[in-house]
Image 1 (cartoon, rainbow, N blue to C red):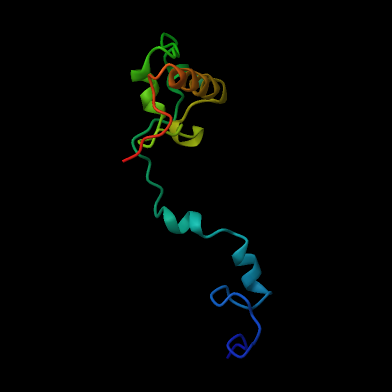
Image 2 (cartoon, rainbow, N blue to C red):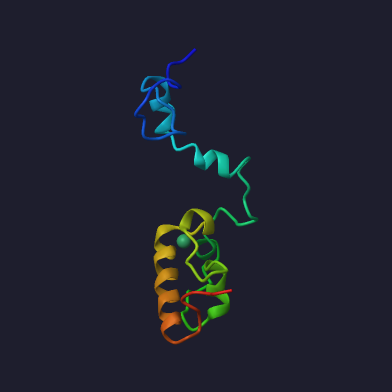
Length: 111
Ligand SMILES: [Zn+2]
């Protein structure tokens, strides 16, 4: 019933033509919902580990503790996943960068 099939000159073939309702749908970035069905939490705690346990200190000379906050490819795990607060996330990233310099942690991990 729609005219989009007869509409010639449309650049995107899969994007859909209508600017009315589809435009609102388009701006919503459905990839986020499509990618993660039923928000899985990978067993990571919601609370900041360092706030929960005051005895823990962020040390760049301790790669075992820092390894928790880097992904398998060596990237720093974002705060929304690691659960750190802003203060400690900043300290963790700083410690990771220092640990990288002295080769305790990798910059990247190539398979
Ligand atoms: Zn904290």
